[in-house]
Image (cartoon, rainbow, N blue to C red):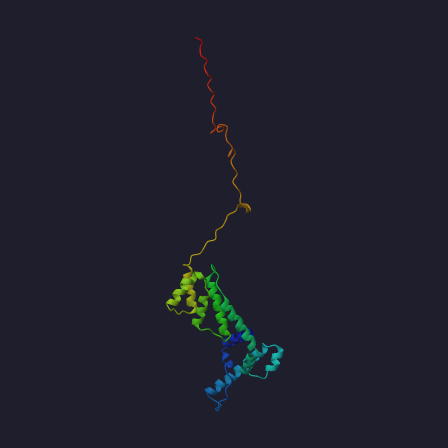
Length: 226
């Protein structure tokens, strides 16, 4: 249904999107006046949109829908692609509720990603209330934002997604970040310091330290002859 969204964008720019909101009313009884001019404009705009829609279709669809007006053609296409739209809505909703912010990543980028899912659901005619959308975003935050979430709920704050986005960016500056220790290794390996020469070797002067020195035994004196 991407082409249908693109069509609505073009029609809004041309101020002709209203022709897809309802069928052409019956012609007014009077042939003059404001009501007649409004009706004629609706007919002309519907014809322009019909031609534009047919030009954007593949030949098979053109043959099946070429006799319908813009509004009737739009309703027929909605019925034909309802299953496709339902599948797309399911995938977007699953992406929204399973999206989780990882510790240490940007909270701003995370909120913008979540908001894109919310916007997609609105375009698929499955809008979330602001309260529900903010609850989903708050539940997707990591444990480091636990205090912020608790304060938000206890104070009963009600904020739009852009306002919540700004609050979380401010809170992010107050959350301490854990630094990763880095081991600096020179040339890809850890090297040991070389031992200085002589280290661990005893010097000549030190040799013998702590050793007992043997003392010579005294010889017995012979008695002198009287």
